[in-house]
Image 1 (spheres, one colour):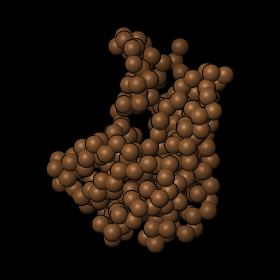
Image 2 (cartoon, rainbow, N blue to C red):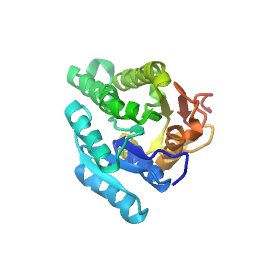
Image 3 (cartoon, rainbow, N blue to C red):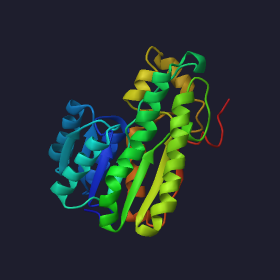
Length: 256
């Protein structure tokens, strides 16, 4: 185990995408991981990858990120299994893409419940354990939609802007008590969500879209996971309240 890596981490959205990639990256560094997601089958796949492929230790706990009871039970199960909790990666999220005037109140509410309130509830469930650890870290996955606005993405942008504000506030409130809080804002990352958004888009059209990025491509989930692992580790011991873009340079501008 890397001496700078967390001993035990709790990861939401761990059944796929950036959550799974983060679980595998942390496990490869020796961190024991508690995996949380509504998708029980996907969780078991991630658990097998951690334990069989990497030889690591994992607990899989199916649950709903909008349920404080589920999250409280899951974090407690991780502490029972591994003795402590000193890292949280809040990766769970959904997309809601619809013109503002066509968007229902239920769609708006569901987007905020999962993408924003889910991060808050994750922090609420985990913080007592993180404070007990004495030195700990939270990293939430927001989006470039957390720093920019986009047409048809109003609910998602509102939720992700909220995540940025929430994490900055946690950084201010708990930094002196030993818990660092940071947030990453990925651009286009190749995940199941990415595939749903681009369903029906040809490979040629995808390549053309990627050319607008200064690096000329979309990112892999593993490229986000390595940043999360760094921010959760002692390598980032004085990093608190950071908003970290992982977007290939689109915060600098888009190519014509």
